[in-house]
Length: 519
Image (cartoon, rainbow, N blue to C red; front, side, top):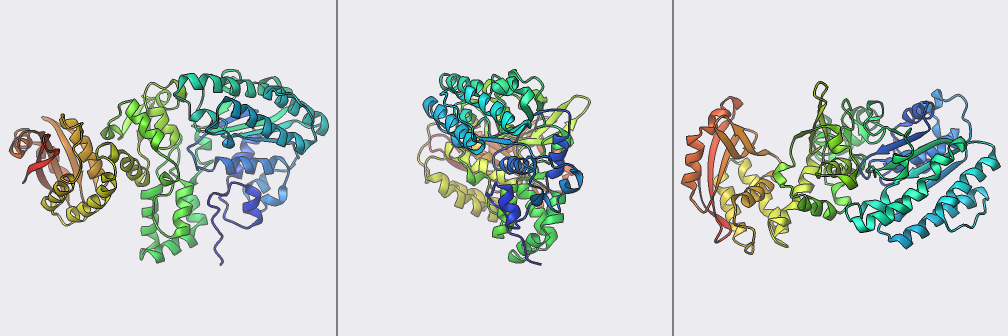
């Protein structure tokens, strides 16, 4: 059997089907939506999760291109295959624009659609052009119009937290989308994708009947790839990855889940793989970081600093849905941005309290995020050198040589220029938390509560549990005494692991570890 090519970065449904590339069948979702009572739908998902491919699939379906759907679920479900006129408006090209550029872009994508349907209208007002386009297409074809808007929020994401620019850009987009309400009699189906919800755009403030399916259980798997889909459709890719890395197929699936799985988009969502990373991993036969490396994290890091988010707090948390599924431009915490951008996801739900548990989805995101944060604690190019030191530390800890690992860390930190933010213990705790987290093979947590206090850092390896206490401008004996005085080890006595206590002292005058004790 010849392995189908993986459509990495290909967002056109017809191209995938005509070239016999791998397609994960999402057409039953489309059928259910198209035959439900509503007209207006919105879906939020992180970038590179297949939103554009979903829109392209919808376009082919509503245009009645039945030949493209042979062998897919919708072929058996759909009986009529009515052909509708489809207006496709992709806002992906409207990123990083000013007001004038955005106006020009809107007129351009409208002109493209006007030419497709032979419509002429020369107004310079995008909202009037869209109104005329919908009504003219309805008149020409005698059928209601389907409007598909991909990445509706793209022009606003860059300025979401710059109030002066956001207001002007948002007014343009609000005006542009307003015809969707007035043209309701002429519309068969309207579908919008995006990353976030902008509360003051007309689609949410005026279209009060819009169905937001982003957190609906029935649509949790509409984008991305579930484990069932992986096992059903990609066995040849799993076998190739296993052979290339000298692993068994079962071990490959476990590593794929560890690296790229773990997303949940509703209370009862199945686990969802990041499709871009998963397909890239199978195609390249490795386990590299793909999704995180494909987009800049500068904006995210800046927002984490703006909201004064400590790296150690990017861990398991509980929240109501209103705390993370809320409009980005009005958010009071970083949580909505982290969730909607794909850096944290749903990991559990308590029906009685209606509390969601949120956490980092997988290893790829965790490592990529903390590597991005490391330069805030290690200046300049030293963060890159730190990657090598951290990898070497990981080997030493795997060999149960925590003393050697700390000596290596001390040697490395001695090469790092003096940092201004060295006057409080928390800075070093966060820096060490990032470094230990990037060891990647171990479970690391901070400020772990015990009956008598809190352990600064707890690290779990294959056969050991390390209790690490930090002191600033004191000595390692003081750190060790705190571990013993508060009997932190008792809290973890049932872990079944050999417990190692580590007391570490930092000297702010040199910005480095000066001494440590291990017991």
